[in-house]
Amino acid sequence: MSVRPKAVSKDAIFRLSRIERQEALVGVAFILPFLILYVIFNFLPILQGFWISLHNWDVIGTNVRFVGFRNYEILFGKDKLFWSSLEHTLFFALLAGPGLIVTGLALALMLNQRVRGIGIFRTIFYMPNILSVTVVGLVFARVFAPGERGFVNAVLSSIGLEPIPWFLDEANAMPTIAITKVWWSVGFNMLIFLAGLQEISQSLYDAAKVDGGGRWTLFRHITLPGLRRPMLFVIVLQLIASVQVFPLIDVLTGGGPAGSTRPLVMYLFERSFDYWQLGYGSAIAFVMFVFLFSISIIQLWFFSRGEGD
Amino acid sequence: MESVPSINQLGAQQAEREKQQTRRNLAITAAMSIFAFVWLIPIAWTLALSFRPEDSITANLTLLLPLPFTAENYDFVFSSSRIPRWFLNSLIVASLRTFLQLMICSLAAYSFARVKFPFRQTVFYFVLIGLMVPGQATFIPVYLLFSNLKLLNSFPALIVPGIASPFAVFLLVQFFKGIPIELEEAARLDGASRIGVYWRIFLPLSTPVLTALAIFTFLGAWNEYLWPLVAATDPEVMTITIGLTNLTATTYTANYGETMAAAWTAGLPIVGFFFVFQKRIISGIQISSGIK
Image 1 (tube, rainbow over the protein chains, first blue to last red):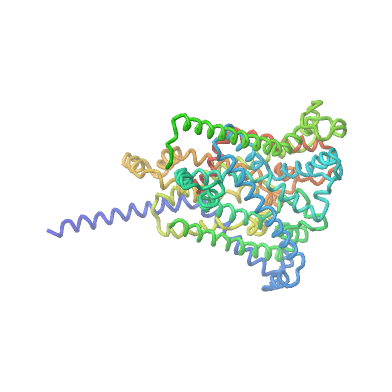
Image 2: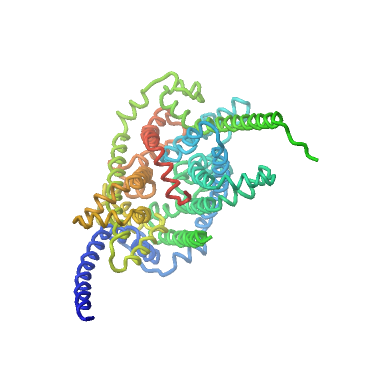
């Protein structure tokens, strides 16, 4: 009695495994084009980059010499330009980050009111975000041009104030870059916060109002806690983007005046492609990679933990 | 003892509250309008500059209107600069990369979501690592690769490295997992092959997410900076984003009208693109952030 079903199931298993094998073949074939490109252009370059960073790789292909961790020793030990470019990067992050978050949140809060024409405002504030960095650079080089050739200075002088050398002054250059950055990309944060605000249940507010909560109490105890996820998301993205800042500064000041706005990636770029020290450049790149990778891991851990709440 | 308010009193309170609300809304709208106006000045001013003759610009710099109107600056840009060529290059690079990325990533995503093969989960985690790798960490080795292949300053150099996007695969796997399995099983019973299911069921059902992805890939490729800066130094293959940096170098004394015409030749099509796809762009950002 038990023999026949067994024979059938054996046969079934045999047939299934043939189908399974076929299925596996199809599955692998489908991911293969992606996987090949991914390995060549995303994965292997990290390992190669680390390998190159252990060399003096001065001119492409010729004069390659293994030096162990010497590049890293120089980088951390006595490279003043590395530390100053790191400082500039942090300075940028400290100026632009809070500016982007506070302005983004303020815009989102205002847009979340039931007022007419919200769509138009949302479009206006988001639009700069899609412009390329070079267009933004060309526009803001004129908006903040020195003397009376710039829009802001022309307005200042028309009300009797002295023109300000925005990008040409060491003290003003980075804050002016940060202002440009806020104009360019605050719309993105605004959209994220707006989405978060719309997820907060109106009943929470109604209940708090019955309990006699004022505007500030509502914001402090309902809105802000409700925005925990979007806030974290925005902060992490901001941090990652700030560490990578380069194109905007490159088109606005080129790192000047006198190298006072040169960020980390610009330094990496100059070492690699102006001085052709690819080993040294790769060491800087690898340090950045380790740092950014760690931030991402922490973010991942944080968000997966948040999921369980 | 509390007195019960009369109907009239209640009505008056209600009216008072509504009045307050209207006043508050008006104040917010006014504040937003001022803010929006300031926000638009950089665009309005430089756009106006691009349509004004140079002597009039020198005479009245801050005018926000294109008066007196001229198209000379654009004539100059189109007839005696490389900008049309760079524009075409950007169009080719961005379109081809978008198309290839969508094809290759959606095929892989379908396989990750629905086809069973050994080590599927492990390979998927391996791909997710790529989400955390910044471009600066990979561009020197990739540069050396293209340099060895003698392929720098070519379209493949600008297009191919951006095709395999871990983010695209991740997003599409999430979406594909939500497509009812019954649809697929029914089609399979009718004799559809795996590729048939992918092409006739999964792709058409994913139009919204594919469109959002296409828009962001296209914009990303159009606006890309670091990689084309090193990969395409020959003016014949430069993208417009990189080509225009040659103009930023020409300091503040350069001709304003022509420079701004160049900038907006690059910028206006993207602004137009934004207005056409506005809804999808905005919802796409909110969806892919995982907030909504």
